[in-house]
Each structure stands twice: as structure tokens, then as C-alpha cells.
Image 1 (cartoon, rainbow, N blue to C red):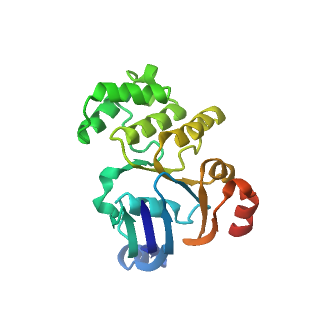
Image 2: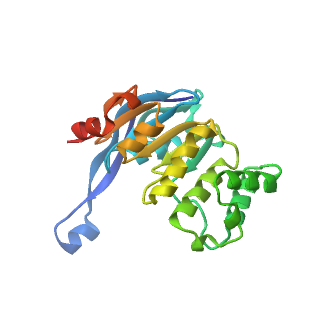
Image 3: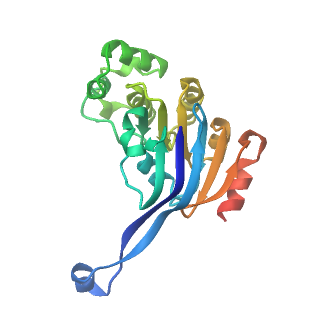
Length: 240
């Protein structure tokens, strides 16, 4: 379903100059390799966990797959085609950053449903929101939602067009234990190919069929049977 080969992404980062004039008028840049020659694949229906500390390259890989960034070199393919040409197959959750807070939950979902040409919009929205336990909040403005409600709405938004692939960037970050547990239990029931990034070793272990640990843009470890491993210990050993 997803194949990444020799993927590399280099950013130009501004170096700190000498004094105000040096910073403003004579800026200098250095290369920062956010993703460094990474290769892996994800089978149809599989849940792959990308685990790593801040700056490991997790979000950069997600943005390349979702067409928000272009790689410097290498390739990211979805069903054999460049990822940027297969965006209709992807549902993306970048926490709650892709929902609008000054309109209702229903209006958010209706907007995205129309954008993707979804048929029978009302029925689709009601079904998804019943599954995610947010149906009773649909007519409320999102700015009044809790962090957990926003996370569920963001997941519903990603599922609206019926994508084959879900890409989730730390979907439970900052959520309470109850909401995190609800989301973790829901994901395996969706019957999607899922790429999940997380900081939490136990979350990766619970959800993933396989795990890849990233460190400084490179693959530090591939774990084929996460449920049979002490992921926390492996993670800590790899990132030190």
C-alpha cells in the first residue's frame, strides 16, 4: 500500500549571525537533514507505528506522504504512484489543527464532505459521529469543545471521504486517559491501513503490527513483533 525508498528531506536553517545587522542583512544558512535515507513499506490493512523523540523525522515523513512537503530525494509511493497524486486515498489527522473553531462540529464535517464530493452527507456525518461518541455535540461551536472532543472531530473529518489510508500524527497527545483509551480502541476497528506517529512506547505497542523507531532522521530499529517486546526498554536503549 505504501512504499518509501531512500527518502531524504533537507531543510535550510538560518544560522545565528553576529549582531542585529548580521542577522538581518547578511543571513547565513546551514543544511538540516530532517529525514536521512529512510526506507520502509506498509501492507494493506496494517498499522505501522513510527516512534521517536522530538526532531526524529516523524512529522516530516507524514507531511511528505500527505503531499504537504516534497522530498529532497528518494520516493514515497502509494499503490505504486507518487504520494502527491494519491491524496484522495488518505485521511490525515494532524492533531486538531485541521478543524475550524468558530463554526459548529457539523459545519466542519459538512464542509469537508462537500469538498470531497461525499454523497448522503447527513447520514455519513451521523454515522461517524455516533461511532466516535460526539453526535450530541455536533451543533455546538468547536471553540467550546474539550481537547478530547476536538481530537474525535478531527478523526471524523479525516474519515468523512472514506479513505483507504489513515495517517495520524500523535492523535492522543495531551488528551486525558479516558479519551486516549477510547481512540486507541477505535482505531483497529476502522479496517484501514494506518501510519501512526507517537511519543508513547506503550501506545505504539498496543496499536501497531510493526514499529519503526526513528532517531535524528534515520531508522534506529525495526520491530516486527511489538507485542512480544518491551518497547519502552528498546526505545530508551535506541534513543540514548
